Image (spheres, chains in turn brown, cyan):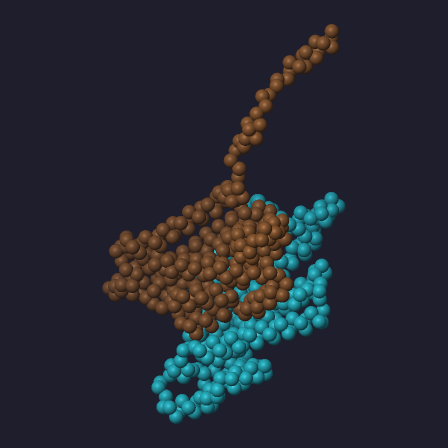
Length: 310
Length: 310
């Protein structure tokens, strides 16, 4: 008797769940992709998000201010030279009476262009060079990396200085000079990544299926190395902006009346004691941009590979 | 070990050969001849000058002669300063630059490590946050802007230090600080991240469980192993300080080799540019070699003799 009741009680405790395989297999939440996850972590980083915002503002100002301003970046106004900041000239005027506010944003265009284009060219050469060296391996790798090593033995800024002296002070010579040895860092990083990835199963699978070298490298390997590549790219831009400013400071910048942040800082330096705003504004924006890009680069690295969090 | 050093020296010679060759041919295709900026010379005198400097010879003879001269440590005459050789300029300017560079190196390494250790030991405290914010700012402010800011605040406004020129120890403080700031920030970040890794090691836990004080653990046990990345950064640091000295010496009016070099760029004094470039490359390559040897001696896990050359 006791046994009976107990077994009945036991049975009543359990309710048969209706078998519904489709229901059971349903994914309740949207699956998070690698990049979704990275983006989520990046968004948690308030400082990095602020820097993204800051950078967007800087870019927007660089695009729109020179369009809408009533001043020209290269129109002299010799009656109003070296004016301090005022309602009329927000950032004051320089020694030729040019509006520093407009010049700052025209300079932003040039400095940012140099930074981005140089970084992109580095990216292109670096990915191809590092990718081929890493994937082919053996003799090819050795020769390619030895060439990179020898180029890298030449001090970076010295090469750029030589190039600027020889080929003249134009926008494209400056970008070209920066990329002569600038791509090596990217090539090394890509090579390291490719070495790690090339023996993994998915690459083997692609090879077995007869995918061509190009397809494996650019469709399978490189996309998986995108994280470190992106971080390196972000950190290359501020160093290119720095290099531009550095060259302008040595008198190897773009020819006047063109303005970049570097040339403006160079022109402002001798006037530091009496007209400090002429150096202050371009210098501040160089620092802000470099700061923002450095923080974004750090944030990206943390977001993409949390183990590397520094 | 000896074999390793010899192999490295051979590779340094190869790199130097490439550098000398590149600079030689770059300077040859540079616009204008060495005498263009002066008054138009009668053709006879120009021919005499060319003959005097060996410029009337075909390029391969000039190139061979230049190689031989450089190999015997003779960088030739300056074209702009009559009677001065490039060797004179180096002998004149390098001691000053060396003094300034070593002072900056000391500041960067000492305070960089200190800041990094403090930040790591008190991870996620206000000390950590403030020193790392300081480090990001240090990385984002180019040395010449730092120099201008220091000069403006401490020399012009507060008048604690002389504004420019070279003389007493007091003259060296501001330029050395400006030169050291970026590497200091970098070393601080580097030290912090390796220190954090090292502090998680088992042997640190052992030391803790044995009851050593925190000070002993940090400075006796952990610090030694945290310094390895800093040591390998000393090579790039040398390059950083050399190129930084160009602008810093210009801003502070210091008669160092960097200032001479910038002057030679402005003057398009090609032999000086070539000679000083080669000289800086030698210093840099030797510094990198020295760092690698020291690294091998300090860390027995790295067998220099077994490592690949370069």
